[in-house]
Image (cartoon, rainbow, N blue to C red):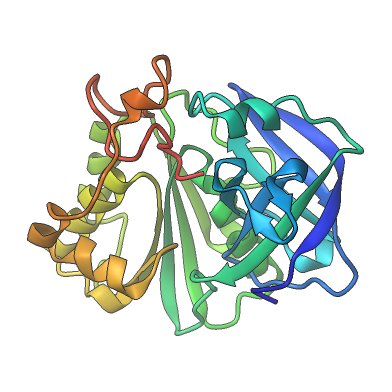
Length: 275
């Protein structure tokens, strides 16, 4: 599945507001995935003779579950001035793209623990299918706490993902890093000894959040990120993070400001939602 390329047609484009959009693609009959998966999405002209033009592809989380019968991704259209985002914003239903490289690094873990989802901006796209999977089957999960960091307070999918006491789902929205830290520092809100933490956001957000969790004695094994185990090791071992290659987002966009960050250089290439 990871190395198979599929040509898919856009069925619908949903305006999510705040310059965010969800692209809904037809699902190839033989294509399957699990919650927490991401794919590479290449524009139609981005694949020639089996070779991918890296300027015309990006990785996105699949925001739908298999039973929904479509492949959806959500993104900010102003997260960079790249040719990719500019071309993506001009696509219409009926246009075609290529998907490939499907992989999941954030499946739901049913270990009789609490699950804490922490996302920044459109990082909620990663969390939606995991939460939906939990809604359909609560086996091996005590509760879900969904923490969204979005300075507008208008997080994605808010009409379908909110607090649900009957399913032990609690959704909290932080409009700033300060509010976010207050949520993490509320000792009555989160059980740090018996929870698994899923984190999606910019490099800086990952680094800061993992450090906060480590300071609260959360073990590395109980932290999930949509990256390799080697990357998690670097984030968890804070000193080694300083040696990681980071980008200057100002080279990519003169107008985009990372969600919840104070003015200044950003470490993730202007792609602060990681998507």
